[in-house]
Length: 158
Image (cartoon, rainbow, N blue to C red; front, side, top):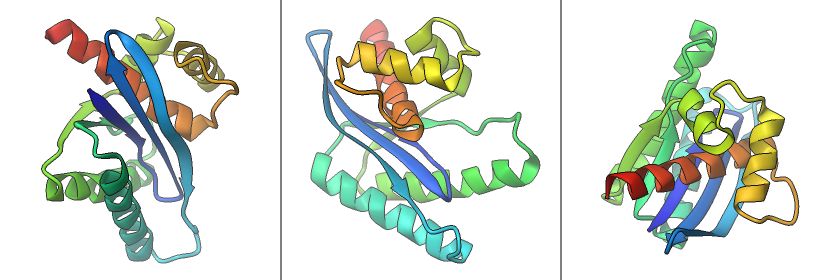
């Protein structure tokens, strides 16, 4: 199963793609997509949508694991993340790809064993689980953690 994890944002979007075969993960791709914060919101959302479409056409994931809105954020930040999530969900719908959502606490628990783990702990555990040579950037690590979380969850429900 090929899983694309996406940590959405209107200035930075983390993306990671892993393949889970025989309970072993292979990291196919990860990056942080930087979006010019000086662009008007509609152009940033367009960039998120176009970039997501481009990545879907390259990687052909079976599913997208998406971070759910974090309710501890201020209202305006939660709305912006929701808008970024919508751009990703629409891209996935256009490719008939299932989207599953996980709370940040569930993702952290899946990779660190603790739902309130610090970002640096998530980065280090992602590096370890995926046997990466270096620690991935924070947003990319979050995306990879989402993919790991879904892969482990799917293995338990199969």
